Length: 111
Image (cartoon, rainbow, N blue to C red; front, top):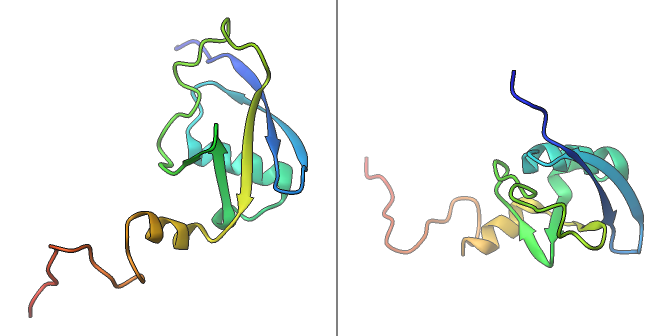
C-alpha cells in the first residue's frame, strides 16, 4: 500500500473575517478541498471560490498543496473563500459572454 500523505491544518478566511479550520492531506485535489471548505462554512460548492495567495484556484483536478515544503512553512497555511457564481466567473475568465458563446476563431457546427 502507498503511504498516506501527511495532513496539514489550513485556516480558511471568509470575506467578513469568518475563520474556519480544516485538516487536509497534502495530496488532496481542489474538488475535495472545496467539499471540506463547504462543510466548514456552509457555502454551496457551486458558489464557493477558493483563493491561495490571492490567486483563484480553478482546476478541480489540481492539487493545491502538492510540492509544499512543510519545513519551510513559517506561518500557518491560509486560504480565502468568496461566495460568487463560479460558472459566471469561469465564463469571464475564458472571455465568454454566455453559455452558448464561442471563443473567436471557433466556428459552430453547420448542419
